[in-house]
Length: 171
View 1 (cartoon, rainbow, N blue to C red):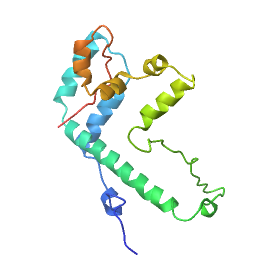
View 2: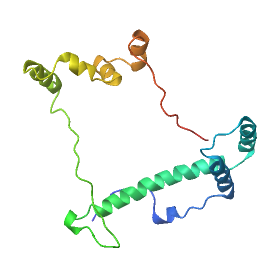
View 3: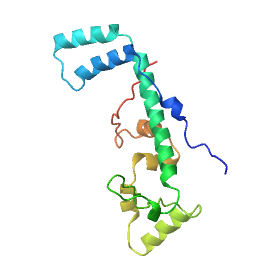
View 4: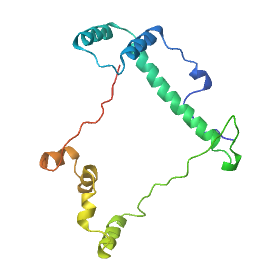
């Protein structure tokens, strides 16, 4: 039986220990997480935060745990995908089940979207205006073949940019 690559971690790889510096940084961050700081406390917080070492090790630990979680998920999915649903345990100690199977829908071939829209419009089931009003900016830009920034530059009266959550990077 051939073994395909499912996991990125071996069981021995999971024996990781956080450094004291990383734990100290985490304890400091945890102590203040979600707390609104007054100006004086914020100044002290920033000074202490910037003097602490261990932030890089803490972020490396976060990255490790994220990769380990992906590996564990892949191993678990493979383990419980062997056999049929009837073979899954259902006891007091362990109950395993799968969500209902979901599907994604795709076009059969190029040209199908246009043909379908034309048929729907001909039958009076939808108008072109209704279809266009449900398109997102990215969908419209993709259809036109234009970058979103360029489209916004040309038509600022129609498009606005909303901030999305930023990703934190520590190196």
